Image (cartoon, rainbow, N blue to C red):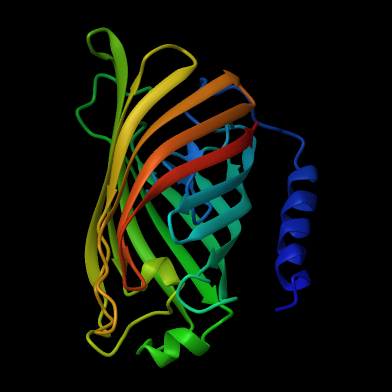
Length: 286
C-alpha cells in the first residue's frame, strides 16, 4: 500500500485548518473527549455526539491522536486527525494497522477511515435545564487494503460505510457532586472486526443495528474514569465475533493534552478467544 495515499488527505486537513482565522479553544476542558479508534471524537471505542476539539460555534477546533491496543495475541495501532467546524460539523481521517501474525505469520491488515459527523440538535453541556441530549449523525467510510485473508474466510467486500446516531448528555454535579457524561450510539454496520476482516460475510451480508455506550465520571477537573461497550455483528462462519468493552482512566494535564489508559476486553478475535489487554492513547486538542 502506498502510504502517500493516506498522508495526502492529512496534509489537506492541516492546510485547511491553517486557512481558518478563528481557531478553537474556548470550550471547557474535557469536552473535546478522546478520539476513538476510527478517528472520530468520543470515547476510545465509541463515537459521541460531541464535536472534536474545543471550538465554539464561532471557532474551528481539532485534535490529533495516536493509539495502541495490545492483547496477548494481537496489536492494533491507529492514528489520525479530526477537525471540528463551529461546533457543528466534524471531519476526520485515520489510519489503522492490525498485527495478526499470531494467526498468519507476518500478516498485517491496514485500513483507512474517513469520518463525518454533524450535530443535529441539543447541547450536551450547556443545556442543563433540558432533559434532551445532544444528538449527532455520523458516517465512517472504511477501506481495507489487505483483503487476501478476509476474502479467504468469507468476507464479501473491501470497503463499506458505517452509519450511526449518537446521543450524549452531561450532568454537572450529577453523581456525588461529580460531573457525569453518558452516551448512547446506534450503528448500522456490516464490518467484521471493525473492518480489518472486511465487510459482510458468508453467514450474513446485511446491515445490522448495533448498540454502543459510554459512561464517564469526572473525579477532578483533570481526571476522568469510565467504561464503554460496543456490540458488533457476527458475519463470518469461520470466526465468532464478540462485543468490545473497556474500563478507562483519562488524564488531562492541561487543555491541549489528553492521555487515556484502559483495560480492554475484545473477546474472540480471528478465532482466538479471551483477548484482553492494554489500551493507551495520546491526544493533542485545541
